[in-house]
Image (cartoon, rainbow, N blue to C red; front, side):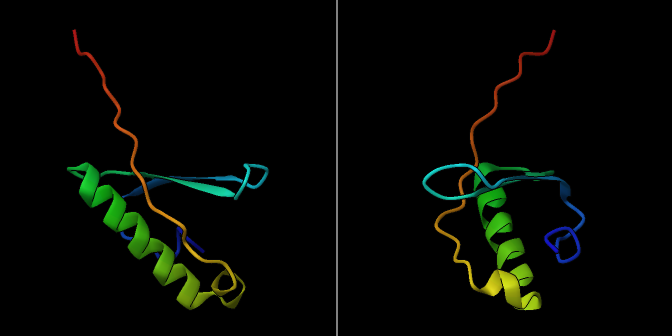
Amino acid sequence: MLEATAPDVLEHVSVHLQSRPHPVIGLFLRVASLNEAESTAEQIWVRAATACPQLAEWCLRRAEAPLMYYELD
C-alpha cells in the first residue's frame, strides 16, 4: 500500500515488525534533502493510511531521515 500511494521518488520499502518498542517502516527515497525526505515519508504514510483502513488503526510516531555520508573517490 505504501508503494501504491507513493510518488515516484520511492525506491524501496523495508518493514521491521519486530522492532521495539514500535514497528519500523524504512522508506528509501530519491530526494534532495533530509527535510524533504522526512516530509515525503510523512505524506506517503498519510496517503496509505487514508487508502487502507487497516493502516488507519496505526499512527505515525515520527518520520526521521538518517544522515548518510559517502566518500567518492
